[in-house]
Length: 313
Image 1 (cartoon, one colour):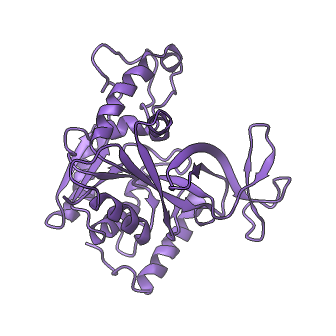
Image 2 (cartoon, rainbow, N blue to C red):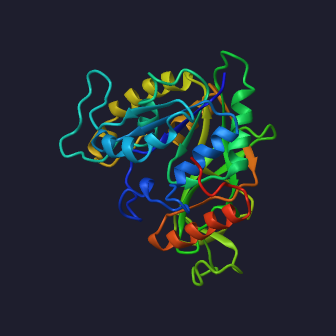
């Protein structure tokens, strides 16, 4: 059974501004997600599913879905603030969605096969899709509790225009994930934090005490590119109830049910394994508005080199 590509497209780019998922960056107005979908199809994925907000369904169908007609089967599902288990209600004053793993849960009725979850506004690169596609397609039929994530080399995921947030990963001798620590400020800089973004500086992250610590060039980091089997939905439903039952998560109107939170629970209790897949792909994206032109230029260079056709679909 061919795996499914599941794109998280329900969020807004707060640092970039606007619906960057629909920003045309390729030579014919292609979005970053168009390149992800093209790479996924090349890597053997058989279906594309998006989770979006209901209020821009019409724009999404016109601007995005229409171009894939006849190319690959497509489906939509929707993330809503009030999509909660029976017995739970949205806390008064909450406007923020419930996070990435809540978005994943929205796909449980349309995804019945191994699937890869990605952000729709990150450029992951061809090799990353080859690695996760190979892992998912080689799983024996009916596999459970055997997951994967693509571990990008940290040096291949930085922005020249500011700090980035990455999940820094640790793994054992079987390359099974043992821990993900979210580092919210990673950048090339001097030991005192100066010269941020300078290519000749080592990679550093700011620790809990506000000190800059060195980070290895090739340490694997999570870019939210995960491979799951459908049993993951069942675990997520169960744990989401626990999450909502915790008073501090209901009192904190910005508390979020993240994918790493779910994965960390499953690997810590020994329920599942998550293999860290290496990739040579170089991530890029539009974290900051200043990243946009560099992203346009990098895509054009890949087109000029023949990696992508001038017009994808």
